[in-house]
Structures are given as structure tokens and as C-alpha cells.
Image (cartoon, rainbow, N blue to C red; front, side, top):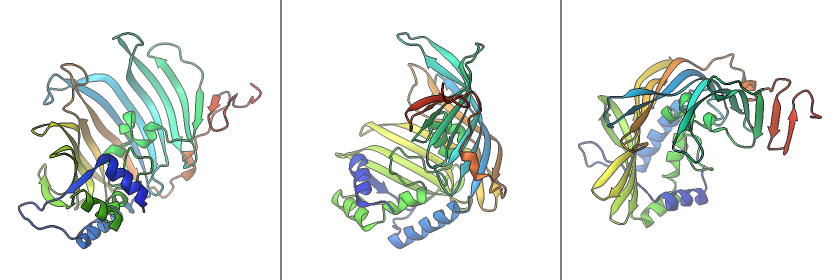
Amino acid sequence: MANLKTITMIFLSVILFIEVSIANSSQTLSVTDVEELITQIEAAENRLNNVRIKAEVWQEQAISPDGPWEQAKSYVQATSWLDGRSKDKGKVNVHSEISRISLADSEDYEHREQSYTASYDGQAGRLLFHKDGKKGQPQPAEHARIMDSVPQIVRGIGSGLVTSRRFTLNYFFVDAYKDAPSSFSQWLKMFIQPEAQNLAADFGQEYKFVPETYEGVESVRFTIKAQADEAPSVEMHFWFDPNRGFALLGHENVRYKEPDNKFVDTRIKVTKLEKVDDGIWWPVEGAIESDRQIREGVYARTVFRALNVVANDPDFDNDIFTIPFPEGTRVHDELADKTYVVGDEDK
């Protein structure tokens, strides 16, 4: 359970106003009702022991946020192994990643292709690069890093969209706070603690939940509003499907430039769910969009597609989260503050 310091940090830095209204009703869910709902969400989370996902993501661009969309060159295909019990643990084998790189002191850019493996075993992060450079050019020998943090792709940030973490907040809660809870249910529990209730009262705030229809599906909506003076400066909406293991259906991060001028900074839509085990529904198609332009006159979105998903494999190897480095690999160990070649540590 998060402590008062963590709760205070979140409330003071984000100034959360959690609003939930019952669709077509003025009824407000009591703390007891919310606790029961969180218990159901937590039970759904606990059904997942492990999962392997082979997926691909690519970027599409358009001159309007409504499209039509054209596929860009940026693309990632990877296989991910995630631990459903220890949320940070994971391994991602990136088969191919083509990314756009801006050139120094220039408005020009180039596309770089690389392949690598990243992991975090609960103690240290590891990166092993197999191919790293511009497309079509000779690549250097394998090189690696050891670090004390979780590699971004394993956390689900940036190209880590390919792990599906951002589309599975009901299992893997991705948050920017260092001490943030690892699951959505634990995050929700923070707001029904007496300390959180007192902080909300101090700011004149409250929270509720909303049963409503989202894209034709019965869902539960959870809305957070950050208050600034008389008008909200940001809203966050989450829609979950209570009939399919509280799978995420959608998420919107709405920002206000002025009280009557708002835009969607981030929009996540899961367009297809697939049942992969008893009580477990996994996103196999989705997209992340924004009303913001990536450059003048150009909008972008990232499209996700799972090619294969296996959940709760009884033969899952938990040692997979510590990737070995082959002989001859040049390793930069940030924990030990040294660089060496595997098999020839004198070098």
C-alpha cells in the first residue's frame, strides 16, 4: 500500500480531482461499492501468471486527425515475455526496429534499423544489441549494457508499445512516478485511503465511477480531473470492460489550453480483444492517437497488432528474464562501472 508521502506527492503534483457520475443517474457509489469494484479488478489481475506476445507496431501519418492515414517507415516487430506476478520483470526480443533519427544541427533525418534483446529480472536491466546502425550498412559486433533500471521498451514506453503494456493497464499499470503502484487496482486503492480522502477534502475534490457504454460496449469509466483555478487543466478517462476481465477498452488524456479550448493529448483505443485463457482477454488490435501535430500540418498515430498471444504457460521459464551475453560481446556494466569482453575479461 502506498504511504502518505507518495499519496501527497501525487495529489500535490497532479492535483487530482476524481470525478465519477452514474450514467443517467445522480447516484454516487459509496466507498464500500468502490472497494468491491476494486476487489473484482484485483481478482481479474491475479488470473495472469505469465504471457508471451509476438506483435508489431507501426506509425501512420495524416494531414488531419481524422485521416486518411498512410503508413510511415517507423516499425517494430518483437516477441515479449512478461511476468504477471512481478510486474517489472520482462524480456523483449526486438526482431526489427526501424526508427526515425534526427540529424545533429540539421532539420534532416534518417531511418535506423536495429535489433536487440532487453530484459529486467527484478535486480538489473540488460540490453544486448545484435544490429545497430543505418539500414544497409555494416553493423558492429554485438555489444551490451547492464543497468540498474528497467529498459524503456520493457516498461512499455516508446517503442515498448509493442509489448502491449500500454493497452493492458488492467494487468500492467504504466505510470511515470518512480514509486507508483505496479497495478491499476493498487493505484485505485490509494484514493480510498483515509489519508487520500482527507487530501481530497482539503482541495474540495471527490471521486466516483461511471457505468456507461463505450463504442457500443458496456463499460466502467474512471475519470480524473486536475483542477487549475476555475477550469480543469487536464482530464484522464479510462474505460474497462467488466464482462471481459476488466480489459482496457479506451483511455483519453485531455488537456485544456483555456476553459473552453481542449484537445486530446493521448487517445488509446483497443479495437479487438481475444480470449487467451480462462477470464483473460488480451488486446490484439489497437491504436494510440493524439490531436497534437508531430510537426506542422502532420498528425501521427501508432497502430498495434498482436500476431500471437500465449497466457499462463505452465512451462514458462522464469530464468528467461536474465539474458546471457554470448562470448565476444563487449559489455558496459554500469553497476560495476567497468567495460569488458565476455570470455576475455582482460580486454
